[in-house]
Length: 90
Image (cartoon, rainbow, N blue to C red; front, side, top):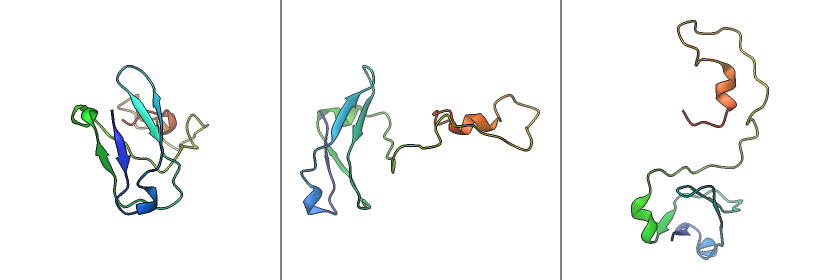
């Protein structure tokens, strides 16, 4: 139970966003807004159980695209250019 409001834009106060449940503990909320947003207000009983909140300008168009690099750090297997577009935030 989460509702979203955008305090900077009165016309967006009642904007309907699409909620998609990814799994039992993850929900993506999509709001199609073309204007820059200066703030966001979350209300509802589920807000106190939020572990993380990611706000994105949009879809990552580089996700899973081909990558290349000129050198690799030899001390670790984790420094490959493909990790930049693998979808993980780490």
